[in-house]
Image 1 (cartoon, rainbow, N blue to C red):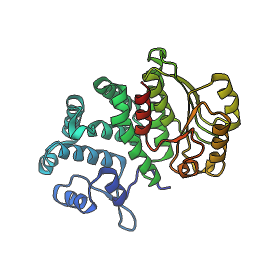
Image 2 (cartoon, helix red, strand yellow; image 1 turned 135 degrees about the vertical axis):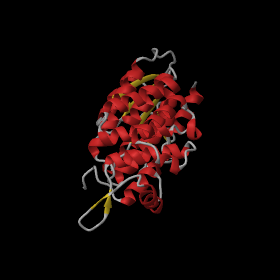
Image 3 (cartoon, rainbow, N blue to C red; image 1 turned 30 degrees about the vertical axis):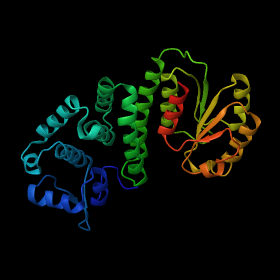
Image 4 (cartoon, helix red, strand yellow; image 1 turned 120 degrees about the vertical axis):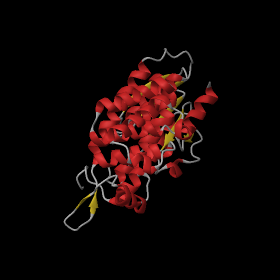
Length: 300
């Protein structure tokens, strides 16, 4: 893995959403950034330059011209970005680009204060539910692709995930006690450690007033028998995100669903939904977070 602070122009293109030839024109005409060069004369860029370009693309989306931005100091650019974030929460077609860019910048530089301030401001402006939908979902989508293409390190991804994890746990704890009778069990199977999606689901369940029994990460599937018999849930939600469960998980879930007819087993996975579709009938495949939210809406 190359050092996290170095990006070639192809990676930079994906990170900031600007074509490589446009980036080169900005370098030549406006001297917006000055890439370093390797021994083989290949351009590479650092975290500070990525952050600068993220801010520039945000100002462009807000109607600034590139010639105007080129005349600004870095401090002035940052000030404009902060003003957009604080006063225009619906900017850029509701996608909250300013906040997203701030989270990406904070992740690249391990800036916990900036990350927390950005999340706290979004929650204040939008509420937690809209922050989840309109900021966290796009952020994790972006970070996921950056991680797969070696543009962020596992340490950077864990840094961001753990801050959001804390925020979701605190938000869930502040919700009223459940008043509705439906009960959900939420768990991740053996070898699954990335629990942000499960915590998001836990928050949504509690927000709608249902009871959530949150078991968390790396739960042995054989232990679920005891939990289901003790709690008699209406729904059991699990997520299979890694391929290590691809061979054994479908049979294990199918066995649980055949053994216990009452709960509906909700399964989300990018790999094995075809193996579970249609049998037994108390297994429901969730293809997206929107599917889960729609299910909760129907129950309320």
